[in-house]
Image 1: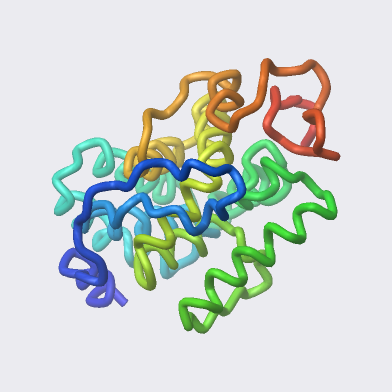
Image 2: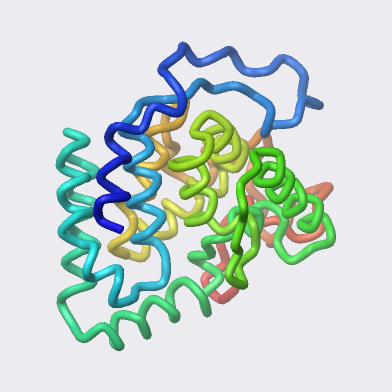
Length: 248
């Protein structure tokens, strides 16, 4: 496994090309927009972040030295620090305690949902169409997808796809759900959770500057001013609004 991750630094499945301009027509599938392949080190950021955002196991602990080495090899000090912060959190206590905290923050609490479409579609019928779009991305790539009980928009799965299968297509999918990534990033920041730096590094690989407020995320998504209640006009139960701390 460690040797497998080592190959990421030399991965050459897609070369560097200039990012194309934003598609002019809103009806173009966001997954089909071309934002370029990014940089080779992005594959490392995606794969390592995906593993560290997943449920922590003994294997995760065994791979921490490799994750740390790969992060340092990217020559991105912010990403290296982000990985170290999570590594410190993982090793500060017994694994069972860490796993319990992880479940509380990422599985039981909706405030830090790792499913990208949850932030935009909530638990609505519209979300089913989104999940099918992710499935289509995997199917079209020829990737043999083992969801292991997760939905196809599960962030660690999308990151693994971007790292190991098709970085260009993976970047398009991540950018299509950039508002979700940013809302999750802000929630982790406000909750002072150790994975915040990983989300910041992921967002830094994508076009554009990360917003600092939820209002700016709404502007990024093309919505108007925030409203007081959960839900935006035209959508049954989206999450692109001010997060209600009681909605967990």
